[in-house]
Length: 388
Image (tube, rainbow, N blue to C red):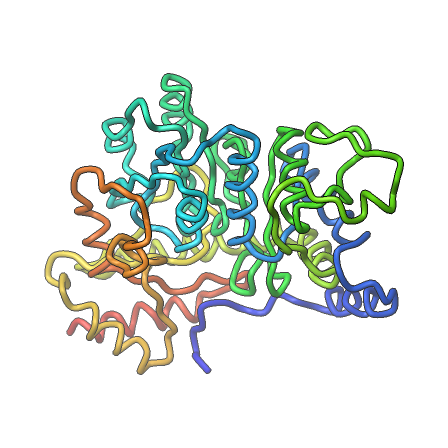
């Protein structure tokens, strides 16, 4: 047990009653609770379609698969990605034969470096998969301009940024498809769980099929991708694309419906915690923190060692852990330094100077949906002792 853990428990009696409601219904796999949650999620974020799946990782998978089967992307197409993100931003690209072009991040925002993106675009580039890292929005005006000028699809991995806002729009809803995670440590928790959202009906129908084995059963009668027959027996086991079993549980959806009601309150508290964290960190020398773009939802607090503290991460992390403060790397650091990269068709654009620096000198601590004043005070005091 940590005095300052990565995350907090946000469940109350409402979530427990939702679980009991599902148990009493005796319907446990994807059903009416999932359908209701998808409708409420889409309405909350102002999109036409939401597809709930069993994880944020699966949301990325179903999104890329839908783009492949719809012909929006083709094997061999080049997709630009930031070099710092979670592994399952990248894995679906590899699994569907796309060429992954890694671009450096901005040292301040920790998101993809837009000048590097501009330089990296070629005639083979068909998509940019932007990541709103640790809750921080990208500069979407610039990204959208680049995409429009070069006829490129913009995708959003928003798994760490539910509730973040860029110029009045929720992140995750700005790209062609956006993905969200509801894992235990995220802004809302359904145990496991994820969502992919889009305003494109064809992609929505592909995702419905891919989520459940590639079958037609969950498609509407006059689908944009398949016209169902009147033979329900035949359509119960009729497969039109290679799919998966990515279906969520009814219990997860029922919990999500209650958590969604609390999201605004959770995000407001996370932002109050962030303001306090930013103020206290100014007292320390040799540390920098993530620079906010518009309105971050502050998944966690990134800390980067610089000047006199550069190269001291191992000793500082050890000291934090000894003082019961839970610490993690900044997501996966520079992903290209992971052994899994040998399975990819990839290219590294220019040098990944900032991604390497974060990889070696960065870490993050958690943010919670409750007041963290006491924990942040403890963090600052422990960091002060660690460097003295």
